[in-house]
Image 1 (cartoon, one colour):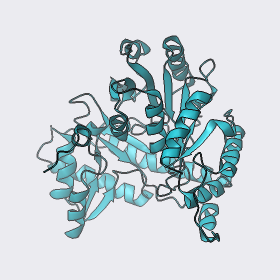
Image 2 (image 1 turned 60 degrees about the vertical axis):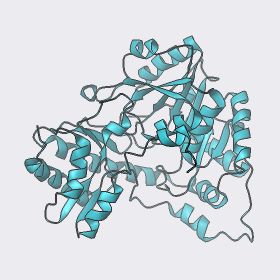
Image 3 (image 1 turned 180 degrees about the vertical axis):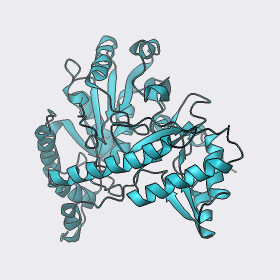
Length: 398
């Protein structure tokens, strides 16, 4: 039998989806499974986007420009400017999801075996993107006790070597919901400028900030415009996860020109999805006000509920719609599987994502799980009850 590549063998499985077979089996037995494992919002997609799809009347679904439709890039740049982010049309390349944007960014800036530093826990697919680009992830751990704040800048700087090409952050963060302060971003800017490396910032959850907090885009950091790459996406902002449209944004003309070559190699981002994404830019501010208010309620139900369970600790996030909780169990992955295989409370159970898959450091996150509070409020209340009852009888409780 022909051999697989080392890359194929070493490519990590998604901790978000790896327990899906157990969830499917649980459903076959009649259990209701509350899916807290994946960031698939149940918020309605804006009507403007849906109507653009319904009203599509072209006779041919053509390729777009490899950088994305110009009309979309012009409108997107204007939207950024409206929100105080200094971006022009020529700074934007539309991609097939935010995932492709980060893969393109890594491939355009890194050579094989170069290194990127990432505060962990981090979005698990960053491991996969790095593997695809032949790049090594160098983690710097942030603690649940600090609410997953940026690790001390000295710890980050100690990780920098001659192979370091950049630092990757997600702000607000997946999987933690942590929102970096302006002071933390300025500290990163200083180290990026000092060592002349890149700062890759995944800002796809920018609209989801709570308790009066405001996001600060890396595009507005002074003195490092040539070092900054912003990643964006319509997936969560407009509840359009299936419309695979993202964007790579940078003031670095050489980088943009190089990324465009990767875009040309895959021809173009999806045509109809771009049409929907362009229409979604007409979404009124009231949509986001309502969505944020709803997520605050959901966050409070989930996080306050978790912290009311004996032995559970969960920092309250100020952004995105995720949290990480530490459970009084021997192994959170075993606990998550046990919930699906062996537990039910009134015919219900819960699916979470084991947090060890969001760390690169071996053994980290062993007692933690990531939770996406994307279900309706009543479902979240029932999920908390399930977890409370499960921990009463879980054989691996400590």
